[in-house]
Length: 146
Image 1 (cartoon, helix red, strand yellow):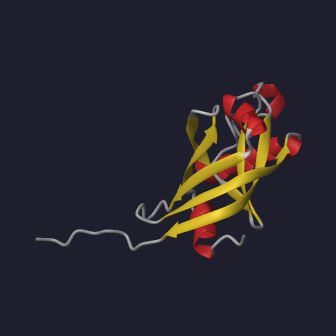
Image 2 (spheres, rainbow, N blue to C red; image 1 turned 90 degrees about the vertical axis):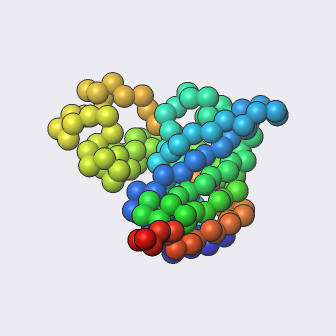
């Protein structure tokens, strides 16, 4: 499924997403996450060994809500599945890209400090195929002066 241009612009503008995975058959776990895309796939990057990494290996269905940072009444709900888990150095380099975009510096370290020197846990990336996309793009609600 093709991602709307407005969604890609929101992600490029540091949109956050609420991500839900199945903790088990009766519970859902939610997280606030950085989000990215590659072509028509969304990307989540997370630390290896977290509960959500086990969740996605048990049930690869995922739900995301992405909010436009400049217009919080605009959002996109995505229902999809994790098609691929990338757990090599690519994921570590990708989190640096995201961290530089969101925070202005590499992930959890200074610009001149290496990944190994920082003793940061390795990362993994999830490539997400969108099965359903609900777009709720609206003009920002503004109150008129009295």
